[in-house]
Image 1 (cartoon, helix red, strand yellow):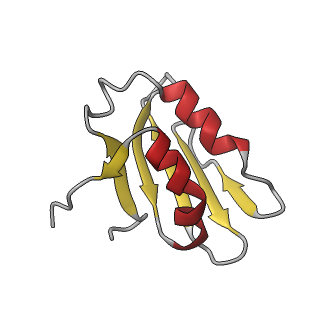
Image 2 (tube, one colour):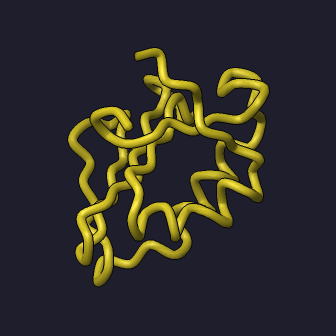
Image 3 (tube, rainbow, N blue to C red):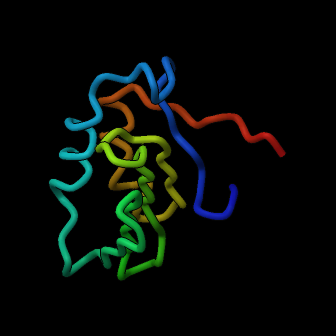
Length: 98
């Protein structure tokens, strides 16, 4: 696992992926401020941290548009929350280049 978690991506890659808006909506849909701390340090990122276990869901967007450029999940409750979304959108862990 790297700094922000395990990176996930569609088989076709993010550039060819055509469901960016639907993916973002699916992720945002169940995240509540009671359970998740939302951080937005730049207009190109969204980070949710579980208030229970500190695990994170991190989205990086292409500059100027709402196209996902990178998705990282750090385990724990973040992985539990994201599991059905990962399956629905056919996302897979990206091989590490370590």
